[in-house]
Amino acid sequence: MTRPSCTYLALVLAALPWSALADSAESPAVPGLAHAAPTLLAAKADADLPLSRESLFADEPPASAPAAPASRESLFADEPPASAPAAPASRESLFADEPPASAPAAPASRESLFADEPPASAPAAPASRESLFADEPPASAPAAPASRESLFADEPPASAPAAPASRDSLFGDVDSPQRQVAALAPTERPARISGFVENIMAYTTPKPSHWSQAMMRADLSGHGDLGGGIKWKLGARVDFDAVYPMSDFYPQAVNDNQTLNFMLRENYLDIGAGDWDFRLGRQHIIWGEMVGLLFGDVVSAKDMRHFVLPEFDILRIPQWAARAEYFKGDFHAEAIWIPVASYDNIGKPGGQFFAYTLPPPPGFTTTFLNEELPSRSLANTNYGLRMSVLQNGWDVAAFAYSSMSVAPTFYRQIIGGAQPTVVYQAQHDRIKQFGTTLAKDLGSVVLKGEAVYTRGLQYQVTNFTDPNGVVPQNTLTWVLGLDFTQFADTRINTQIFQSHFYDHDPDIIPAANEYGYSLLVSHKLSGKIELQALWIASINDSSDWMLRPRVNWNFEKNWALAVGVDVFNGPPLGFFGRYDNSDRVYSELRYSF
Image (cartoon, rainbow, N blue to C red; front, side, top):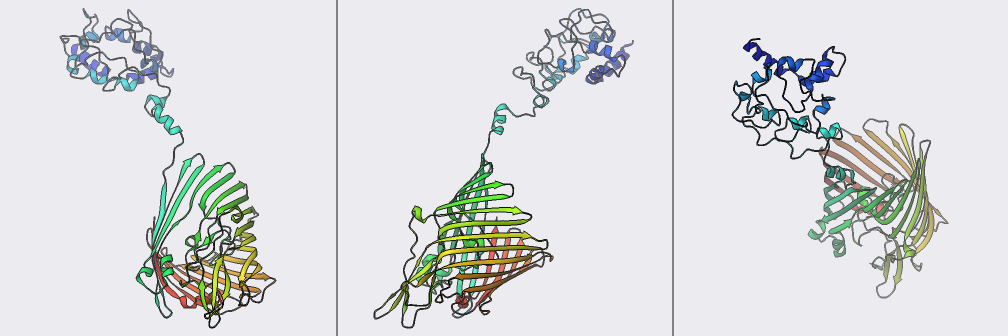
């Protein structure tokens, strides 16, 4: 064979995919290759590399035949061969029929690999493909490569690592043991923060007309997961109403009560244990909710300084409670204990919606003592049980609740003298309540209902000769509602309700049977604008009603603007008529996050 032919052949051989040939040698589908591959891939024990092209591909092993590798994997085993054979000094010696006189050192560079003369000194065998063609040889012979990656790495490993336990660990897909342990250990999830900032402006129109609200409100809450079935929530709200410091329309006591308020919202721990959930802390406990008015919501205290006009989630005041819930299939049971109760915030006399007492007789003045809250004792704690079940589409619940009434009763005392005075004091009595709620989806209509029997609540009497001005009355209040959903982009809700007084005392203001109804209609003009109107009225006295038209506009993401009117009408002692001088127009601008 001529010299140029050898050159071409060497280039062809250098470009051959030897690893693919080795893989194919293991498969019987390629005849003859199974016999050639072991000889081709065999590592010499301590002698030289093949002396010629013929000996490289011969069927007979070389003079000192090292053990052939068992597989491709053993070629890259973690253990280096017993002794490293000397590398060819040149292209000629690689394919010469006779071995060189002495084993030259490995080539120092790609140029010296194909040079006719060997390098002056014998450097160490190349540690990788990169060092094989590098311009300078490595300083010292590195350890045998532990894997295919380390064979072609730029730097050899500091020490021979342990054999990989899996393909993932071989190619570095698995984190370090320390990171694996950290990943397996339960970790606290990051907290999520939410809330809103709101501006409310309200102008009362009856004379003397005046600004009645210029409030900035900020509500912030955070919740997260501690792991192990334990979750938490923290929340607070700050209200600042500029109407009171900027105006002298309201008494100073009202200004002090409603200018700046800081209140804790829900702050609790949730603990899950199988079918049981436990919640400890300040929390909302909602046992009933209808449209417009609160009937079966007997546990929640309310902020009544703006009547029932705010949204219910703003209106409600959380309770400090321990709560246990049990879930099993479609059955749910709930037990609560409230050691330190919250009570309705009714504001101070002279406030816009403070109208809880009878007008005094002619010639009398009226004064109010500070509200008397129940003392903190075991006897004054609240407790209750509620159970519900979902059966054939009917969601039915029943509850029993014993509490110090969240709503106050105004006890009355008459003081004679030169200036007769009617003295009122708000107090809270022990009451017991038993109730039920139901809901049923009837397709295009959803039926809802609530009923509450209350025993022990006191009511004011119009007879000013009564020694304390109140009498106990047992009542049953029920409400039924239908929610129509078959109309596109339109919701219609209608309700009818009644309060029945057992052994009705003729001196109390309500009749033995008080009936009323409500109608809510809302319609979306587009994805951003919604029209809404709520009407609630008495059936006993058709002149006693409240109307609340409103427009909601979600003009940007997280932004909402609402404008509306609240109109009250009725007799001075009517449920709505007592606020006949509180008609108002208002706006609400809210940014939520």
